[in-house]
Image 1 (spheres, rainbow, N blue to C red):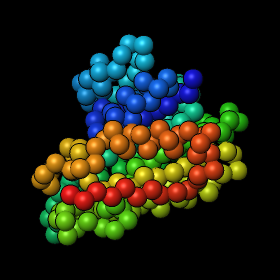
Image 2 (image 1 turned 90 degrees about the vertical axis):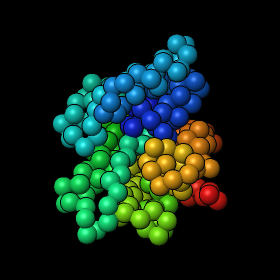
Image 3 (image 1 turned 30 degrees about the vertical axis):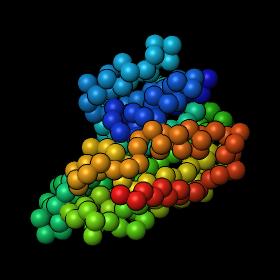
Image 4 (image 1 turned 45 degrees about the vertical axis):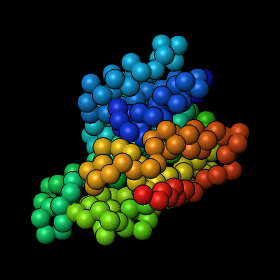
Length: 228
């Protein structure tokens, strides 16, 4: 049974991935900053596929290190993310830094601990990160005020590619998904109901973690488009 850690597991893509992977038989641990949302996800999964939850801020370096000291994982999904909407004239440096701390540093810290643990154990492993089309194309025209989010997601895409190179000698795969508007709380801030559903991205995550079918894929950035 594969042990999978999912950050941002209380909502959106992370929650959908947790439910899908747990139902498929994985031993899933979800983490996030809000216990109530984590418990809601746990309650929606049949007891035969129980999910463990851990309250965690991925930007907290010591807390992330403690998590990996207390548990072993075979795969990781980095789905934690935040957005603060304001243009470059109005967003405070503190808010800009917070977006980078969660979206970029949080991804880095979790990937770093996962890769170190996998290398120390001498086992292969799989990591899926979540960037965004905002990190590939930039989305300021459609989503004004999202410049800090755009910057962080550009960085996640580059980070993922670089991590894949470093992990390759140890059998550690790192692949990235860059979706357009997914029906999450972040996307709904900009109005409308996005066409892409979290369950669809969860299905893609499950495929990427499948070493039998996708073992040759490493360092890829998969773009997912919608028409809304």
